[in-house]
Length: 300
Ligand code: HMG
Ligand code: MG
Image 1 (cartoon, rainbow, N blue to C red):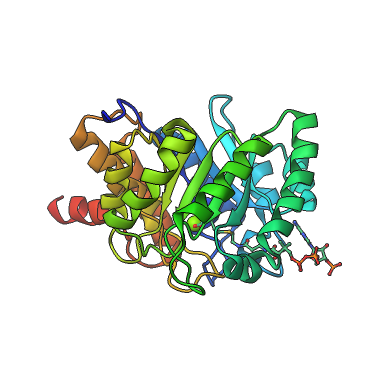
Image 2: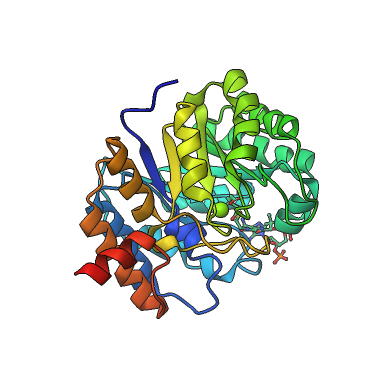
């Protein structure tokens, strides 16, 4: 299959990136992050999560971020929601769309959302009932697609089954997540050999954490299957509090650099994006995890 001419990048930094931080991050800093990403050319941003704040305290100010940030009509400001309660919170602050999440692993779902895969689908069905009435688009996540921190290897058939259920409900795309970054080109190929013929590449997004340094290789592999939607996180922020080892999504800067080199359009200005990554890294008082940002700084 030929490579896509253009890739849609989804920056999940304000949500997946910041949800795992121990220190409080102000609404102002989060708003600056979202607005900076828009200035860099991102058109799809996961702004926050409307989950139980006791479970993920860092996302407790998601309402205020949604209310305070400036918006462009051309940008989708997405919210992650675990249940109808979360959906109603997201709707009240005019999230452009919502993302629902479940996993290909029973063990991970129990730790992350306190229910089985089947029970998560009951919650997701209720979200759909409301979202369809409101005409709100819904994306689906499938965690642990290449391995689970609690139960180990995951059968591609289980991933396919969960993806298919999400699409059947009406998700416009499924984001296939390597939650702890354990995947390699080998396991990614085995998974995509199963998913792409069954679902079509146009409904699949890839969401790679970079714990083992495999994310760019895995994304390059996905591009060869025609996948043209990639999740990433500016400065390589990230991690799921309920997935030990999930420390950092692939850095958006690094994905843009790779795609630029492949002649694939993204609409993103790399220099602006690097500045946005440096700004949030300054707030967090640690260096960016983007190799490209670090390289640009060292040759400046
Ligand atoms: P639960 O405790 O089983 O829920 O949590 P419950 O329905 O029994 O309710 C318990 C309490 O939570 C009640 O309050 C509810 O009102 C409240 P109380 O009566 O005790 O005062 N509650 C809520 N409050 C605010 N907003 C809500 C909400 N729902 C219930 N939406 C629940 C179940 C799913 C809520 C909980 O487990 C949860 O919030 N989990 C979220 C975990 C999470 O955010 N993980 C990180 C995101 S997923 C991820 O990072 C992976 C991803 O990036 C892809 C990848 O990389 O794999 C997407
Ligand atoms: Mg994630």
